[in-house]
Image: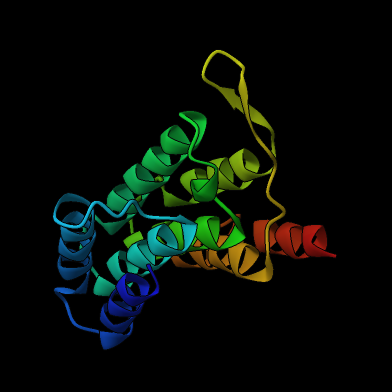
Length: 163
């Protein structure tokens, strides 16, 4: 699995426009041709590659990957529980998206990561995740990019939450 993650990491760091597509193809080949299921590290690096690609729909793509991770976890795959790096990647993607609803989506994700959730008829528990500095940075960046009048106040509130 380390080799696959190294390949994904190389694409994420390449800065090339097709890095998201290439990373997605690597994960597909990994699963279908080699029967290797992604773990949280693979998912995180895959999302990083998509985010850094600059694809217009990157935020929606990484949201779907997050959803898939949660579903896989609820179905019993314990090595795919989203962590702070997962949410950081998703939040960064939304921050860079330019979508009008990005600040609200970032708030939703910040709240989602901090609360317990149950799946599979309540049998599988997804524990809260404590936001790291990169998570807060992405949300603040998202609000700053929004150009909304309330962005400064919200950024200060988020900085206070970090303490």
